[in-house]
Amino acid sequence: MSLISDFISLFFPRSCYVCGNSLYKNEEVLCTRCNLHLPETNYHKMPDNPIHKIFWGKIPVVNASAMYFFKKGGSVQRLVHQLKYKGHLEIGTLLGQNYGHKLKQEERYKDIGLIIPIPLHPKKLRIRGFNQAEVFAGGIAGSMHVQLNSSAIKRVVATSTQTKKSRYKRWENVSGIFEITDSAVLENKHILLVDDVITTGSTMEACLTQLNTIPGIRLSVAAIACAVR
Image (cartoon, rainbow, N blue to C red; front, side, top):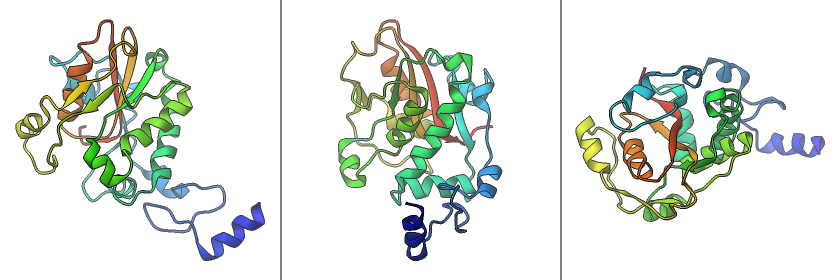
């Protein structure tokens, strides 16, 4: 198998999705240098971190975290772009697996009973072919040995892009766009709601608002990256 892999790599060399340099045999998705230099938040270790504070006074959230800091033009944006727009799903899977290992070491995440990705509208899902949040969430679920559910909540309104919108316009754009499809499976569970990037938190808040109507539910959130510090 190693010989076959070496032969394939001669014609289809594997490259780091951040810097473009060739990957060694023991490297996946990222070269060691880029992996070490990605800006980790460590928010999963910090109660009341800046993401958590976004939801204060709005929605009761148990935990809130993101793997990396998001900066325009930075390495994390390039990584997310490769996943979201170039269809390199292995990025989301590997990042999810790595983050899942970190989350399950924290006591506050050990009672997570279900992992739900922020859903795409069916029209956008057909065009893109996948939901990047679901890919990341699947990696987390695998590492944490927790069930993934991608059907209990759906997006019923197709929204315009959030890019360049003000905080209020972002909230207005996503108000009322989600709908619960299976409330029974959500009752009395600690849910981890997962997205790719959290900026103002308006999309996450809209989804959390619907989930918060479920009896006995407890809510936490996680993302690949966030723009808040």
